[in-house]
Image (tube, rainbow, N blue to C red):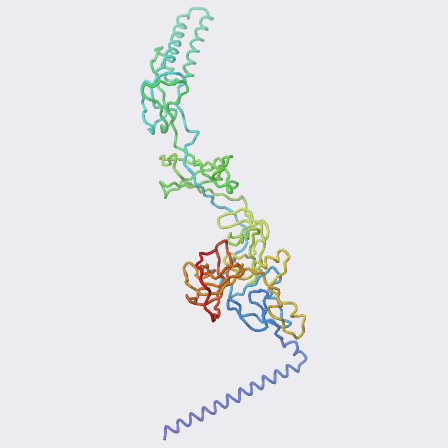
Length: 548
């Protein structure tokens, strides 16, 4: 009995509460209807009541609809009302508009146009060569014979003044005897007249000059003048400290005047001849610093200085030799070694620059996407100057401080009908604004997509079955039907995918509709993937295809 009383009380309380809620809801509804009626009767009611005209494409394309719908990316079309402020519409036919959601999905990033020193590193392959000014040849100026070798191997290090070989020459012996006789005659005629003494002294001096011209060392000449004794052989000494890089002298061989018997090279300083590409030659300036690496010492950097840019170009490699001079302590750099040369190049003053990823090269134009405001972009044709590491100089087209797109600009090009917008730069009709006929026809709905001008075709469409997916490589293989815009038959081929978000939820066997663009010859990139109704008949016949 007690339990029955409790249940009855709870039921009564619930009924009372529900009745109160129902009465309150009716009162609020009546209040809203009364307020709406009062508003309709007021003089300003016509201004507050907005009339739906049409739904426009959220990407700014020239596509409208009389009913709500979604674009291929799943974004809702935006309603446009009569008398609505269209400040969100692009102010120019050359502008494109991207929603905030789409910007985040594509990973769009912007960076400011700024002034900076446009420096970069020019890299070139080179080879170590001896300094031509430090190469010396030992070549006697008279005929003779190699009597004795003191240095008898190539590659032997020698010091300055070190004897290389001894030579015997009948001419040299005769010249010494002439000098000795002239000196003896001068001593014998010291009591003779001045003319006779002057003649003998002149003969002795002439003989001595002849010996000096044959490159006898000062010590040898001094010993001859002091002793008057004729030396059968004469020693040839190294003119510099270095390495014997060439040796032709052999024991007992005969040599002729001017014949090179030894070559001695000073390797304390060497050259690196770098082959600089033709387009970088104009940036190379003598006096600039250079860094050199060789395979023998991968962890060591050798620093030098650019001293000369050669005036000739190799027509086979389209490169110009550039000379880099650098010290060679310990003779670690060997002539003939290959080297990698990094040369710092750049302008003398700051220039206006953008990241090189911001530039879209269409082949005939160079464009950047300028962010006019949040979600609105305008393609600008620019004139490029010099290039640096990750930056490029802008000569004309943008101003300092403007924001340009540096990431996902290709996707904006593909998915936002950028090509049609770029056509507006040349005076073509724009896109992305509502049809003006909707404003001229009072009380009538627009005719829909057929009443808007057709957007320029920027991609291609295909429908088919997903065969396989590679998320790591961002590729899908698809058995698709004919593509009329490219005159392709039904086939199976692999496509690149613009971003990983397009592959979310996609599995092999799904029947989908795709939109794709040609990034470069033979490479096609999918920009849109959407589910498609499976046809009643069997899918397209598969024709193996390796791509285009």
